[in-house]
Length: 276
Figure: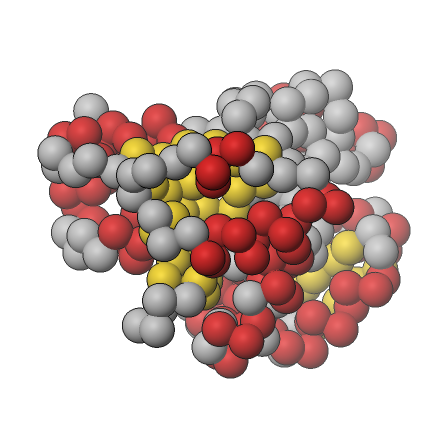
């Protein structure tokens, strides 16, 4: 907890299991903060699971901490910890990736992952009347599902390896399919979204067996992972399908989160500065 005890300046942070190993947000945020001539900086804070509650409480007490981002795997856990401070319309989606102070000075949150995903998808494909499968209902998968609903997508199906997440499908009013059923019938969908973390920092891992992907053609595969840029899933499917990684989604969720936390409303300017 030394980062709290020794910090004397206002700061932002990205919270996660190990964001110090490759998280993109500190570079993006600090680039903009420097250009805007602001003194605050974003730092990565690695948190062990058994220290999560204690850390969030200390951050809430530390008035120098202004907010920031939440990385895997704590988007759902921190949402639960801060549930008393989170508006019901956000809390019902059970996941936050953005953390900031409310008008009472307490930490609250929202989720910009879904906004980033919709922005990225719309740049690459028309979502109207498309049959969509979302694989994985962790924090990011839930946010994407909710944003697809808010965007007016009707024909969306959700799947997760653990059927415990099935209840979430009722919240967004989409049908839940058992994992084996959904992944064995990918020809039935126009857009397949991998919202699991399988393949993150590991090019050899894949969420679906390669045998199931071998004969799939003319689909749109969106893998939210951006490290590596080409996951094993995209490497296999790009031969016969259109593919998209999570790089633009990650950039745009950072733009939306930066705007919310820092109260800099000009998102075009934020994006321009992040890209410089």
